[in-house]
Length: 84
Image (cartoon, rainbow, N blue to C red; front, top):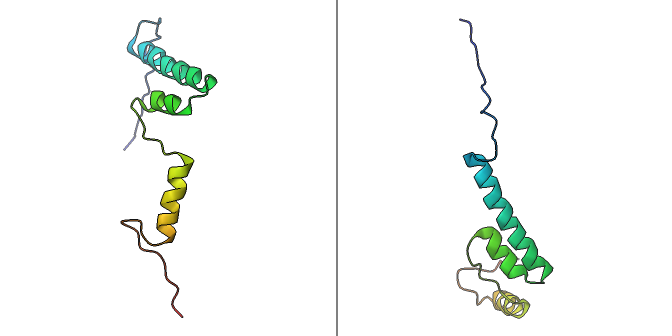
């Protein structure tokens, strides 16, 4: 049985279609993130890109949690113990 597949391109957009609005919205998000990065605020840039606040940990908090993990005190994790 013969098979035919037809592809139809979308109508050209004059800047007023839905995809143009979406492109403008996304560009505004990128511009905001770039502004935050230029001001040295990486957390704000990440929040702008993710469209919500992201909980960021300081290097000290990460180091403290790593030490907890090393001591076997991090809830939800069981350390590997090599058997002899």
